Image (tube, rainbow, N blue to C red):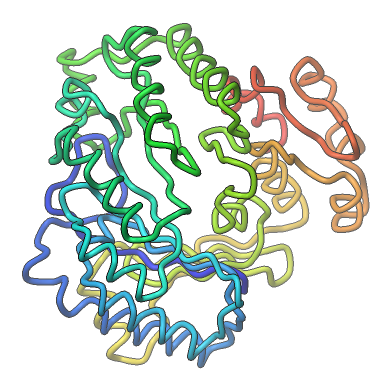
Length: 376
């Protein structure tokens, strides 16, 4: 098991575009939550999950609401139950406004060596549209504090393709981000996920998202500006300096085993053709299962050979490294073109086999949701 994910489902206030499981009753429920995570880690170790761990990722929600001692205790428990690689990547997501130099130094001392900072924007207008609690100054201060705390491996989030955002405004955003010299950038086009306040605003006509053409222009602008600045566009939404790609997320895209701990967390087991499991997004049920000694997760699906082939392409083609033809053949007994002759033929303008790997072009990534259906 190379990867461990811990879900921290608490926020001071939920952002209007977010559809991840989180709650805002932090004061009442957060203090007892780390003990549930420690119980879950022990249960998983007793029921067949094995290390050592190559990556650990604290996601949410807002993991930076956890005090540093709690993070340190969880890391110690993970190391005790599964073992930890000497060069393990340990990431914690943090929001500006919830961190100080003292708190960030505490995370670094606890063993966190990669920080993912949820800036989302460095301009007042977009921050207001996105419902963020912090302002521009707090965002910059959080980056500066992270540097002083010793985080050389720093990732920043950017949301683009906002209502009314012009190419010049997006270019200015990218300039501001590059001035902060991050090691990694995660860049997401704004989408209205069903069930979110943003989706209701769009449905009611109160807010208009860019159309497909404007989104494509924004996506390509981000690609061109960041690659020209020396970043590798290594996954649809992710850019990294050399050697700074997120190893944890690569575990998912390469369809390797991962354990999800916490209410709302997901796991992947490599048994057979693969299985996906999820802990229900229910804190009371999560606590009851753990205190009762039962399995906290539910099996979502098991894959047959065809399903595993399709998911291998679905995940791998999101990345610049693509899908290794030899590995695909060794796993499934046939090559990609043999398994999907019609799909490969239809995608020929965007999909190519080079250096033994199947890859989509950047233009293909723009059409990803439509193109990938040929393999599902």
